[in-house]
Image: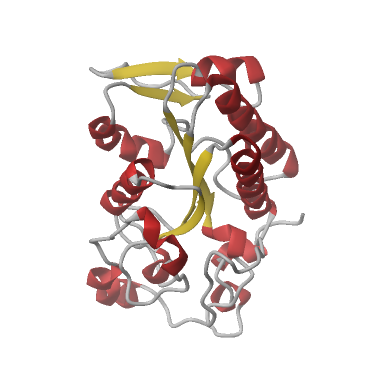
Length: 257
């Protein structure tokens, strides 16, 4: 698992131990000491030699590594463009056959909140971060078509302990459901190259996963239990604000390109 020192990496570290005999954890930043059944590899995704060492001997990769928010082009280029190329090239060279790629809802951020998208809807990134994730999906497709490396591109919504605002009532993904989703991606008999929206079983949703039923993901949690509390602590939305109009929320207005 790359990005093991990040928020989702920390949340999945103990959970993913149930999925393998040895969980190799990697990040650019230092990690806590290895526990039973863990290996630690500190690696910069933009360093091909380091990524080769990181991937060697692995059967599958859960890729959380890289930049996870909107930033200037330089860091995104190194981590999310060069880094994801290095990852797939290393996977090809070392015979890794399955990848769970943490894509993002921000690949689709300029669709309106009144629309529902599925895996065949054309990407509409809401910034450089979303654009980099669209690139990651494309390179994973190339490596499936040419080399047979299966990938689940998981367009993660908002994975936190609980929804933080009204938008997250539609995008929320519980940590337990994220683990269920990763497990389904790793264990389904035929994964192919698949796009799946990573959310829990929320009543309000902008995402249609009917084209990913072969993965076998069944969310058990829902943002609905938090709805009243979220409404009580947040203001009524301004329907003229692009943050409210578009699925990408605040990302549609973050900084100049």
